[in-house]
Image (cartoon, rainbow, N blue to C red; front, side):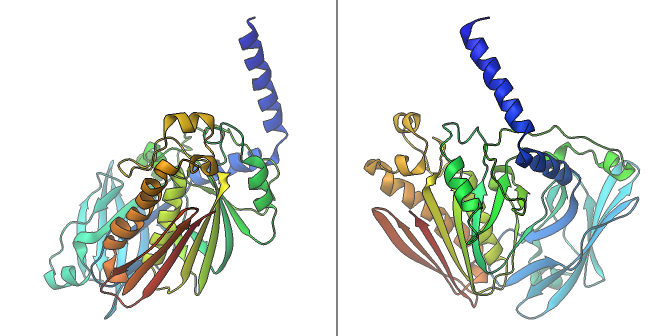
Length: 379
């Protein structure tokens, strides 16, 4: 056997032995399998120009031929009940969404996420801003996580494919075992995993088995009470039940993709709520890694020569020539793209961004009534 193959075999055996002795690995396996069996109907506004939110009033109910869930749409004038039914007819599926117990949008299900067909009541369609309302049939997808006032630690994707230099285990486990924080671990999985679930098998109760995620986890000293959330590319939904202040410190990877997505979804939780709470995001650059190319089209990239030496965010941000571009692009999305999508949800939306050698404050004006503040700090 060649020396390289021998080394690889020894490393593989050591990895397998470590995994079999690591209770965190077993917890993660169980969590993935549990989420594979999740199902829910959901609806949300992709944008708005006036105040309006939609929220479920019960859990999704499954019968032999339907999935059903009730919602409320709240505007600045009234609350409008809505019922969402997905119905099986042979091997075909139709959605039926009823507003105010009388006006219905009906259509054939072609995609798991879709816009509703027009309704006959034009005044009601305008009132609920129907073209901006999107609905989803979620299978094998994590349920939304409730956020309340407090100090959180989000460890995003503790996987070897991100932390390939093995720099993060010590700093991350220090946070996980610090009683000051309510920790949460986001586990990576494949985007659109639920599309692998056959709807007929689902309704027939067939024990479908999805391809299992590679267990390349790099943590071991994880308290048993730390929740695990399956989060493809950091895309988890959050119910924002915060009254005054939410503090989140981030560790993990990647800062320019998965952590960026996690940040985006927390802010979306705020924008889609009625809360006036302040969000304080803190990114520990000594406990975060980044990939060389970040979110497509946003310019969140790093030079190849820098990244080959170290993918630790603290090291990457030592390059003074990229600091202005990197931070400006991070801030630009949350200000201009995300902020302009929900102008009906705030009167003012202020972001205070601060990093070593760079800081900026921006404020957006909207048509709503709330003054919202988000603080972003990289240290």
